[in-house]
Image (cartoon, rainbow, N blue to C red):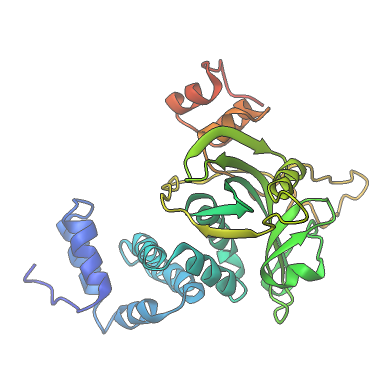
Length: 315
């Protein structure tokens, strides 16, 4: 270690505590990382990384990876995790919604994953006196300026607003995340949820399908003369760790007309913008076997979800 002068930086601390002490880095890897992190090397870029907002952090992480900095991707993920747990879940979601409209096209998917994970694993939905955990969500985002002109977005005026409820043209409910100044339309479709007890404990009751879920939320309001008609997100006092890889697949019910071979939806119809939260919810879906293979679940998890061992991969 005496061969390398130690640059004073968050990256150096990360190398020592997360890579070296945990046996993730060999001594040659550590020395090379410290050499590249010097002020005469990638040090200034690392300093920018530690001071940047999230949209720029992601871009700088990509540049550090391209420059060959060891453990650059892991360092970027480490910083996001630190910021995620420093903020409350509601503050973090608000920050994500604000930042996504300033992000690079190649970073949009990272925001989709982070927003859905926050909603499914760190937040609850309260409708009147009833509590729900969101277990199935779909992302819809139309932003030509970010090279993401998803044609399946309704582009309702409400979708230009951040974090509003939008009763969409399919008679279901979105949480919006657009930006009127940027001209981006965003909606997170609520497709499924788990009922919770008043104390926030999970029950075995799941609601699947966006229209059924919307009906259940409205029914929770009770009497029109004196019921509680609130519909708000709140922090989950017992947040659930998100899986290392999100369970995601193509959105449900989208149609590509065969006569339109150059249909603008072609690049988007099969994108994995549907996110599923947990085993219990997956268990009651009709195409659960196909989804188990699509999510690349291990044998034990697949067996728990299906109740049997599948013979082979489902087409």
